[in-house]
Image (cartoon, rainbow, N blue to C red; front, top):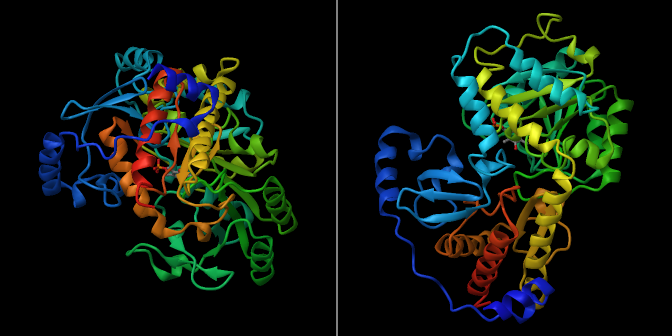
Length: 457
Ligand SMILES: *Cc1c(COP(=O)(O)O)cnc(C)c1O
């Protein structure tokens, strides 16, 4: 055991012993019982669809508590967690600084519907350390931030059409719940019942990483496009890394056509670095949206831009946007505590190094074993893709049949105490709370599970 651990550190993952095979299922009785109950109350038993475990084996685990990089379910099983509440928990679960600040602020009441000093404090933390926003507005979710950013872009430019990319998710706002039809440049087809066709007609959907497509879209809809919206780095449908040059091309073509470039950084904001994907690429989007990490685990979203663009938001300007709980003091407190930690010098360097070492060691193992697996990663985000392609840059590059392998991987990982998002299209997150020891344990579990996945290849 020790000998093989040493080998792992030295990078000879190919020499790892072959696993003992599939592990027996952990006890999931209490979770299953809770799920049966929940189905009486909520559609599919959940309050957000992917939680329902529809793409993997078994029923959802009901989580009872989290601490550091661990979560415990209702049956008392302990897991090393790489879901991190889908991204917000960059410091890990229940970080003492966040918990203490929230507890302190809560003593004064939960909500006032009037300004508080805490909003100024979080805004100052962000604006002082982020060259992409001069003025901001807090919302209560990422969806709301994106919805408002779209309205702002339309109000500011006086144009209606939006260009979005197949494979990018921007929350569940009507005009963005659209998918590509057939053809290079298409009007969106609604991807949800209840979204009027006429709304989807205002959204043009094109493939990622394709200059001809965006060029054709701007030619076809000349002077009609208010904004192009893209995820900082698309991370909701696999991790679709874009070339810097392509993103710069987007920036330029937007300028030429007087359309705004919206960076939806709800995942990548404060994740790749304090200034998100915009700084990572070295481009300057016109509007950025944040969510997830910004609230330290409580519901916060934000959109921001230059003072000039933000001047169009009500009450200064004519674009209406509001929120009863926007800037909620308890949520602001969590954001302040979390973002303060992120600003410590060396924070991102240490986290990102740890995460890339983790991802690359899994890759070395898979390569040595000739397994059809690629571990795509950036910052502390990683994605396990069952493919032999060196690059996956658009939604079309993903082979849907590879998800069968993910199902097996997911079951094997749960049975070895590793929790990851219950879909092969979801990325994983390494947090600052994952120590080298836990990453080694997780790596070993992943390697063993891969042996099971590929046993009959
Ligand atoms: C999660 C996410 C959203 C939606 O945020 P919610 O807080 O779930 O409404 C929007 N855009 C991106 C890129 C996201 O990852």
